[in-house]
Image (cartoon, rainbow, N blue to C red):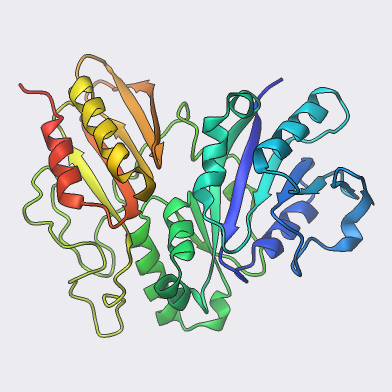
Length: 354
């Protein structure tokens, strides 16, 4: 049986997760989707698309999808669904896990890596985060859960953008970009989003063609001198702070979730890098939300795809460097109050000596 793709749908209270989910379920895409909800609250999936309720809380929907509430832990629920699929008792193509608005997506994502049985049945495709344009700035200021949800995202959907001014939306998108530059952003109206932006994003698939967009921290309308990160001396400000923005800018938001990038055209020494990252995650792992990169390693002609979530990290060989292609490493770190200077210096010291 091929691996079952899984998508985590997160976002703060009232951000529109269920609206987007209902839109996806109602679309004529021909896929059968298993939905796991942390709980049935006021925003539960409409009762008119639910057909039957079993003792195990697995509910068949009229469009062939299924839905279940979590009465035990997520691991047990995923195992139950996979077992029923193997036995031919349930037919579904993929899983969507809708978290509560106050959930930290980290432990949900880790479930797919820490349990061998889950890892043998499922492929974690991506984490989608809904952001409420009207209330996001305040939520991001006040609630670490909201900041974590942004930091973990592979794709950001901004809801309720019609309720704010164009300037407010621009400020929010700029703030989100500096919290998590690797996640594309899209404003969505009442969950209206094409399926290709929801499924098969391969945000967690190490074997997928993966490259960090070389322009993802390029100067936008708000000017920053990012320069060459191999020389870090002139890049001491944290993104979103001490920047020369107009008066409407978000510079006063001192988000504890921040991102920064390491770049170098020198190859890494594999042993040095493994030792450094191993030591770092032992100390700062709980604060390291996502770290991901394409690395130039000494001793191989192939790109090394690397990523981690909290203390869990892994690497895989990617495609070969093409003849004439500039070999370089790009690694993005997204975390809570991470010691940027220590991380950048340690990465620099993990490069191979010529």
